[in-house]
Image (cartoon, rainbow, N blue to C red; front, side):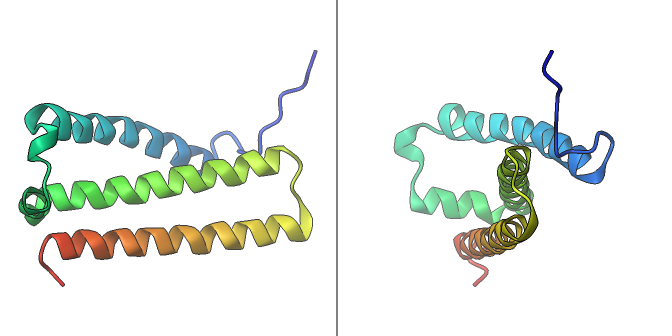
Length: 121
């Protein structure tokens, strides 16, 4: 029988955060989808309406947390998938650094855009 291997330590911080962000993403993705496909229809999703939605602090914070959770969950998942495939040593450190820099850049850009949409910049 094949042995199961995971780079996640069950009960470890990375393991826990991956599960918490997954649950958060399911809820916020449902909210996001409902908001932009049922409450407002495609024709109503305009730049101006986006600015109005982002001006609401609760909506703004939800979308920023959605961005952070999605970036962490995706990048952490890719990194651990690569580790599970045998990535180790210097390449592992390089991949971690590149993914971390890309993730921080993605989140910073996303927050900057969200703040601009809210009229805060």
